[in-house]
Image (cartoon, one colour):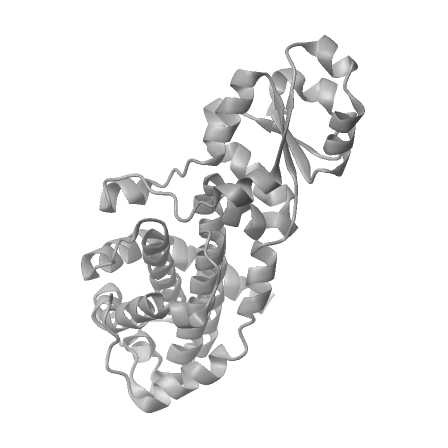
Length: 320
């Protein structure tokens, strides 16, 4: 377990106060929302789709863990969510029994291959086409169109977790970039060049960014198949605070200790570190990988340019 860094009581008390406003119960409700997913096709196609639902493709996992992992998988929950409609040819579809028609109408969506999509569309309430050659694209399309079920889908099926994690990490990174961008603007913070080295005068920034990252942590816990229970997430809490401590020196290196570093750079750095911390938390959720200083620094550098681009867009939008 990552050791909790030494932070003064005022910082921890402020964080605890802000955490009271995070509704983790709502996350649990979203993750356990009931739905039915119908898999329709031949025996071999259904077997392929079932295997696909249980896979998790995440490049960083291979780089930092060198083993496969998926996070928590509850097979009983999966069985409750899945319905199977098997057929051999188009004639079978024309002669569907009523129970199949009811299952297709009541399901959140039906997943099938391209060869059956047109024939099944009139029977299904919603339909997605499974593409074995672009599994990530299929998962992304489903998450985009089934937004109310995102946490429930990821909580249940590993295939959605990496893409969903990237969505939540990016959303939090944008939030933190926005906060850092405008508090670092001239005349808003007395010494903006030091805002990311976590000095006393930047306490409010540190608290807000950290609380957003803890909210992101709860989201990653939920989408990785676990129930969010704050007292059971002390290791993750330690990871966040530990990486925030490491970020002191890492942020200084990225900024080059430039006293004239502007809001866009600071927004970019906030985006980069939040993204790196999110990736570290996700790796811990799915594989138990404990993040290192090397990981944070390397990943923050990877995300810095995108962070500055995001910060520029945020600043431009604010000025128009």
